[in-house]
Length: 201
Image (cartoon, rainbow, N blue to C red; front, side):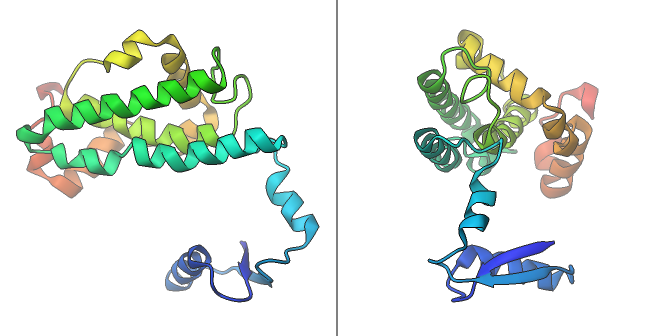
């Protein structure tokens, strides 16, 4: 692992990574660079990727999507519904609103898809797919509702979900149903398992 950090030590995100690596005793090479004077070759290597658009407008759109998706598809907030019947309807409505927002963003940037930028797979899809996948697990096992109305209605959204979650790279690191149930059971115990369909218990 090679970690590039700012020599000024002002970046909190680099601080997080360094602390974690040190705590876990993970070996890595640290390269310190001036925060506001990074070598052009390094900047190019970070941005000139097939997953990151070269066009500055599309790049800005991808960045905005990544930021706002974490504000709209809030899996951690919906977890409050686990074991609490009084919060399930609210969680489902909130999830519906989040997916409606996602559908609007997808249509605004490509009417056909299947990905955020159309046929081009990008870091926007990589950022959003894990949020969507976990939300759908929560819908399936905790909220126990039918498919979200917006997913039923929008072919664009359905195509995005299917395409993004079918990528081999995504599937390789995404937990399956059994792993999700095992994790949720470990964290929430009976609060989670009491809502499971009898066939999965």
